[in-house]
Amino acid sequence: MSAKVAIAEPIRGRAGAVGRWRTLGAIGIKMMFFDRLKLAGTLFGVVFAVVLGNFQMGTFLALLSKNRMFVEAQTDVDLWVTPPGTRQFQGGKPLNDSHLNRARALEGVAWAEPLVLQTAQLTLPNGGREPVSLVGTRAPRFAGGPWNVVKGEREALLTPGGVFFEDAEREKFGGLNYGSVRELGGRKVQVVGFTWGLLPFAPAYAFAEQTLAREIVQLPADQHTFIMVGVQPGADPVAVRAALQAELPDTRVMTRAEYLHEILVYIVTGTQIGLSFGTSTFMGLLVGLITVALSMFSSVVDNLRAFGTLKAIGSTTADLARLLLVQALIYGLVGSLMGLGMVAAMVSGMRNPQLTPILPMAAFGITVVLMVGVCLAASVLALLRVRKLEPAMVFR
Amino acid sequence: MSDPAVKLKGLTKTYGEGALAFEALKGIDLEVARGEFLMLVGPSGSGKTTLLSILGCVLAPTRGEGFLFSEPLHGRKERELPELRLSYIGFIFQGHNLLPALTAEQNVAFPLELRGYSHRAALAEAREVLGAVGLEDKLTSHPDALSGGQRQRVSVARAIAGRPPLILADEPTASLDAQTGAQVTTLLKDLSTERGHTVIVVTHDSRIFHLADRTVHIEDGRLVPPPVKE
Image (cartoon, rainbow over all chains, first blue to last red; front, top):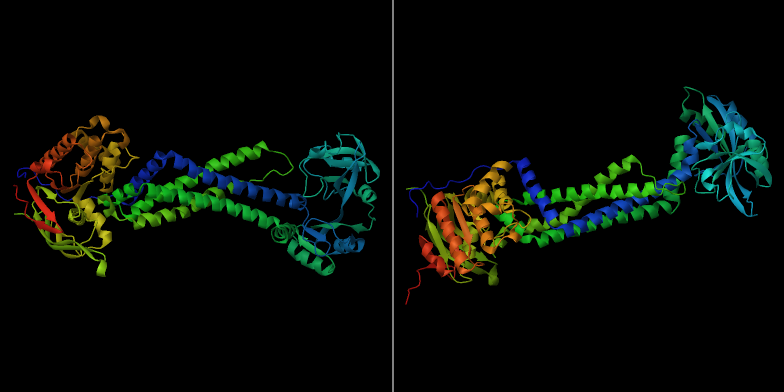
């Protein structure tokens, strides 16, 4: 026994909350990178969930966009007069001149234009046929006329027989070129312009001046698929919509925003598309959750002695929770960034107007937040295990 | 005269209840002086690990009283025990229990960080004590790159770093050959003498008994007189 040496005294210093997060977080990160196989497996699960979830969501948004693109593009149209029961951008029982004239006469309405939309058959050089969604628009306003124009001017629709076609479908339409002559609905037409990416969840849009369009689809001059309405400056579109609906009770009148919302609701609730894509996205997230949960749990089980040692030496259960939460945070952050990088690369590699998933910038932020949340939730299993861990196990 | 480092009065520990109850410690009375190097000796199942666990504040006694540097061990809430461990105890485990993901210096430094050392100060202290155990050239080695003796020396360094007043060693030579075991125990003895630690070593390795200031024998949950040599 030593009598001359100063006896060691109790150590009273303690790390604060920040210090504990830093110390335990650093240990957690080192443990993650020490078992690289497990790290790779866990990240694979997160990346898989991110890629699957974003692809499903992106494809759903692309489908939604295809169904809403026409209404969405007509930013100068405040109100849509549609056949009763309309829930998507699709014609029904035609509207007539009485509807059009009463709309024009209503107070607060600046203008009202009829729109023709019907399927027409394009005859190919080989004798085959391809359908197009023919839109009849009226000069000089050309409301509902072509947008995303890559060749030609809208005014060219006034050329006798002039029609705009979709550039992405040129091959499908028998090698269409600017100036090509084809037969559309039995009427000879000439290509006077091209649009890009106007491919709804139906045949590609083609645009003609309304008189020509009516001739092609054989729709009388007093019948219209839709009526587009612009309200006077300063007028409240919602109030004008209500007045117009009262004036035209045998139609359905919607503001542009209401129409877009109606299409969304129809796609989500009126078809299996919402359920299908929602289920796939949920499954992706579930796979991510389960993978991370099992991986973190098995990591704790594999390192029980290390966790027991940490507890025995003086770490609390809260300290070990810090360690696991930092690991979960890293899994979520790194996994979602890797997954988003892969999704972005894949989407940019398949840039075509057919059905390219749409990934809004918000999806990136939402994905990171969601996956970090999923990973934090997944750490609960591991947390429960370390909570039950007895530090005395290190002496057994 | 200051209070002893350890004082136990009628300490009992019972596992289980009713017909399945098993009394691992049956009224232990023990005092360990400050700075003493004590060995707790006994056969397997004698209760020495249970006693070590109670002294290490990882297990609560069922009855009796225990004091660590006058601080009561009995009647403590579980959430208070980690604090006691950080304040008073450095551990040396039978299987060294180093964290495989950390280097030698990181293994020694992290308990210091829990005790409020800055990262830099903890690493500096870790390097100093690793130097004291002769591992200055293994600071950045992971445990799997070290021999058994080197790992146990890292474990010794981790226990003494920060200078906790009590070092508890659980069979520190169990996984070492005779020569290495003796070296590690001698090292522990020398360092604890230099630095003023009280040390309790649980062992049944008779080859190191001579290093102890005192040897206490435990059998069937009771402290017993040392066996008489024939």
